[in-house]
Length: 345
Image (tube, rainbow, N blue to C red; front, top):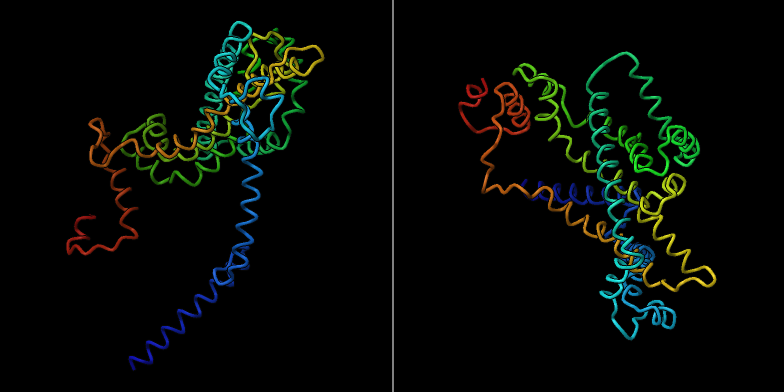
């Protein structure tokens, strides 16, 4: 009987492994039993990786060259002189340090515009997900319609509107349009529906917490992954924005980095213009430094509080909310305590 049970177990394991291989092949994943298919997938991924990394490698190599080396050497080869630090110093000193002004302008637009857009998306998405009010479906239709309309189609109406208000060629022409993020609002709406249980909000209200306190102390920590995602989308969109400042801004003192570097590029490529291609390359390298360190910052986001050193200012969870959390955590955890039922009561 024991041998028969062992054979049955082995047949069941083999059947499960075969079904898993079929399911993996049906979903497009590499089959571990087919090494040629795995090698092919690896080669394809390597080709795409080289394609994606090639511009960054080219940028990094050519930022170390002088202007003479840039025009006389191979694009993927280093020059005779390592001039990266000299190029960076020249970038910040060129045209009375206008690059530093462009960098400050870009940070201003990102902090105020993208930060405000993220905050509005969080509050708006949470309200649409957790409150019922007349016109909710109409708001949903407007948000979906706003996502489907390309931003370039709204550029001319926005310019005419800001021209009537006298706000063109001012920072407000960049900040105010950046505050509206239909995709961020939709993302936070969907995430709030799934991440924040309605029962938890009801437990907080029973404990006497108002809507504002419930949002900040109960819901906001649960929305952290969605907040980070929305913030990254809005920050990247604002940092890389090119067309809006191109039509809104005329004064170089208010340019962001995208328009400023393009102005330098046009200056270097025109006939009789000053040869500053190495400065354009170095300035482009400086602009991507924040994004090269973004992944490391994201990895360290969740490790700020050490489990061995709990925070001294830790909030005391109200009793009804704590009971709800305990009930949710114990639902799928069988207890060996003989007094389990009494403890839950």
